[in-house]
Every structure is written in structure tokens, then in C-alpha cells.
Image (tube, rainbow, N blue to C red):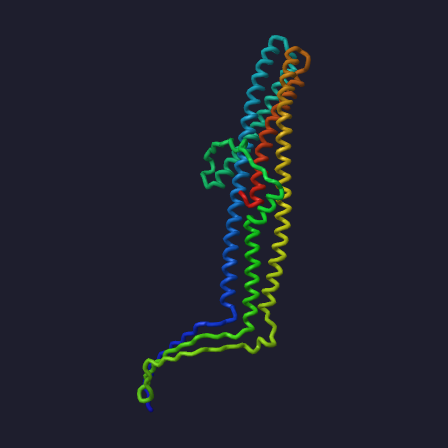
Length: 338
């Protein structure tokens, strides 16, 4: 026949009925991995929270140092002024006046350093919060003396192994690896699918087919799987071993971190207690030394040394309290409770 044109249409559809579980386990593995990624994001958010707490504590330390040094500088200047009047009246040696003025100069230098640190801490805090760099931040110091409940070390360890997002993510990745193994094993099984097709054709002078439909069941099996090694299965098993090893390493690391953070917090509490005693001692020592100086029983050098010791004790207790807050929050972060 002479054919000058041909029009035809084909439509084939295949719906898997049995694939040995490859589709099911593939979806299962992807779901586990997606949940693990979400947990990774939660872990990152906890890290951001802890970094913000540390930045705020540093800002508190810097501001406290500025306040204490400023207060001590004012007292030192007043002392130098009073001693200057005594020196003018011939009641004080010039050398003693110079010692007092030298202390004021040293405190002025310390104040410059403290103010510089405060400015840098303020800028760092603003950048973390997404605020203009030079905006001053008013500090709420109530967090320093806030009550903190301390559990036992074993409780924190158990909570960490249950609540840590990275541990949960590692467990999900292990499940994903197990699903990949089952999916790889499914390649050894045949595929069965429900098939269907539609054919329409119009070839002049030769054939014309209208609405021809076929339905059937398709069967497919790869004979090569009988003697070829399943590289995908070997890879999946290796990934499972890697996931198990990573999970064990992570568990050990978490236990070690909990131990370290717990001991660090206890150490910070002991340091705070000792610094509080030292502050009481330094304050009393300054009071006694000042009385003795007024009665000409000690030198001005002794009085200035006592004053410096009192200032250092005040700084130590403020820093120790801030460090205790940081240590406690770090323990909470490690335990997954932040």
C-alpha cells in the first residue's frame, strides 16, 4: 500500500506490586535521614544559645570590672587629694604622696583597659543579636544570683544519652543504614508489576486501531544477581558499621563531657565560696590597716596594698559567679537540657 502519513499513540503504565522491599526500605531510609538532619539543626540552635550566654557573661564581666575600677579610682583620687593637703602642710612625706598618685595612675590605666574590653564585649553581643554595633546594652544582673538545681552526675549522664540531639541523630542514621541493607538485599528478588497500555493508530490504506487497551502482569528478574557480588549491599553494610562505631564514639564523648562539665561546675561553686571568704577577709584587712594607718602604726604602702587586695577580691568574686553560671549552662547543654 502507498502510505503518505501515519498517526499513532502509545501509552504504557506500570504499577509495582512487589519489588522485594526496595521502595519501602528506600523511603524508610530517607525518612530517617531527614529526621536526623532536623535534629542536627536543633543541636546547632543549642550551640547558638550557649554562645549567646557566654557573650552575655563576658559583657557582665567587662561591665562589672568597669564599675569596680571606677569606684576604686574615685576613692584613690580622694585619698591622693587628702594626702596632698597633708603634704602641703608638711605633715606627709612627698614620697608617700607620690605612691598614692601612682596608684591612681595605675587605676586609670586599668580603667582604660576595662572600658575597652566592655566596648568590645558590647559590640560582640550586638552582632550576635543582630543589633546595631554601637547600641549600649543594659545588663540585667539578676541571673548571677539565680537559683540552680543540681542533679547527680548519674542523672545528667542518663538524661544526656536520652535527650542529646546528636545521639538521637546518630541512632537515626544507624536505622537508615539498616534500611539500606534491607533495600540492597531486595535486589536479589524479582520485580512484579501490574502493567497496562493504550494504543491508537491510523495508517491509511493499511490499518486503523481505535481504543485498544491491554492489561497484564509483568515479571522481571536479573539473572546476573545469582553470581555477581552485590556491591550496594557491601557498601550498605560498611555504612552500618561506620554508623555503629560513630555512635559508640559519640556516647563515650558525651559521658566524658558530662563528667568534665559536672566537675567544672562543682569547682566553680567551690571557687565562688572561697572568693567570698577572701572578700570578707580583704575587706576586714583593709579596715584594720586603715585604722592602723590613721594611728601611724603602718606605712602608706601597707594601706595601698590592702586597698588593691580588696579590689582584686571584689573582681574575683564577680568573675567567679559569672563563671559558675557559664559552667552550669554548659552542663545543661551537654545534657541536652539547655
